[in-house]
Length: 406
Image (cartoon, rainbow, N blue to C red; front, side, top):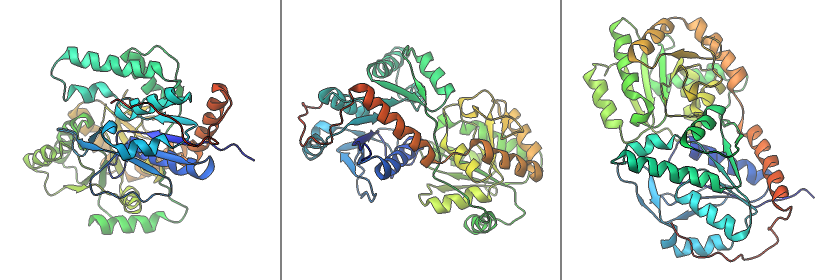
C-alpha cells in the first residue's frame, strides 16, 4: 500500500482572496488531497464566505488588515473552536507559505509534535513592510524576524533562483530548494478560436482590436504608475489598443483616477476580480499581450497562466518576474521606465504575427501544470518525512498541542 501522509498548507490568505500564494496553496491542497492523503488548508476566516472544496479548510478568527484591503489578520488564540479542531489533526508534515501568523502557527505545531516543517519564501516582504512601517529601523527589524523564521524551519523552498537571491539579500544563510510554480489554466487543441470569441463577448471587443491585459493585485508595488504612464505615452504616439485591468487592491481608486487624469477612459477598463477561472481563461485567450511591469513579484503565476493560453508578457528587464524569459523569444522585456516600456509596447502593438510566434514559444517553455508540479512536491514530502525519522503519524488519534501564541 502506498504511503499516505496528512499534510497542512498554512497561509495568511486564501480564497476568496485571490493572489499568487493563495492560488498556490489551493492547488497544492487539491492535488495532494487526491494523491497523497488528507491535505488541509489553514487560513484566516473571511466573513460571509463558505468554503466548498473537496479538501478540508480550517479557518480561524481574523480582523481586517488596516490599509491592506481585502487582507485580514488572523488571531488563532482567540478561536477556541479552531484550536480544538487543529489539535485533533494528526499532521505528518506542515508547509508554511508565509512567515507571519499562519507560518508561526505551523512552526508551533511542528515543534510540538516532532514533525517536519517546510516553508516557502514567496514574497518580497520588505516592499510590503515599507508601505506601512514608519521608520527604516522598524523595517530592518521586521526583515530580521522574517529571516529568523526561515532559519528556524526544516526546509526552505523558493519558486525560482531570483527569489532565492532575494532571501539571501535579506540575510538568510541556510540552504534552499527551488520548487517552481505551475498553473491550473489550460487550453486544449482546437479551443483557442472559441475562447477568443468568448473573450470578445466578455470584453465587448472586436476581432481586430489589440487587447492588452493586466491580472493581479491593484497595489503600488506592482508598478502601476509606470504602466499607466506608459499607456498614456503609447496613446499619445498613436497607439490604438483596449487595456483591461483584472483584480482589486488598496490602490484601485488611485489607479482609476490616474487613468482618468491621463485621458484613457475610452481605452482602459477596470474589470475587478474575476473569480470564474473559465471566464479568466477566455480573457487570457483573447488578449494579445500581458502587461506586467512589476518589480515586486518573484515568480508571478499570471505569467505562467498567460503562457498556458499562448499569451506573451511584456516584463521589466532584470526583474525577478522575468527569470526564464528571453526578449523576443518567449516574451518581451523593457526598461524600468515609462518611456522605455511605452517604446517597447508601441513596437509590438501592430506586430500580431510576432506576438503569436512569441506566445507559442511562451507556451512551450513557461507553461507547466500544477498537477506535474505537485507530483514533484509529493515526492519531496515523502523524502522529507523519511529523513525526519521515517515514521508517519496518521495512526495517532488526538495529539496534544500547547497553547498557541500569535
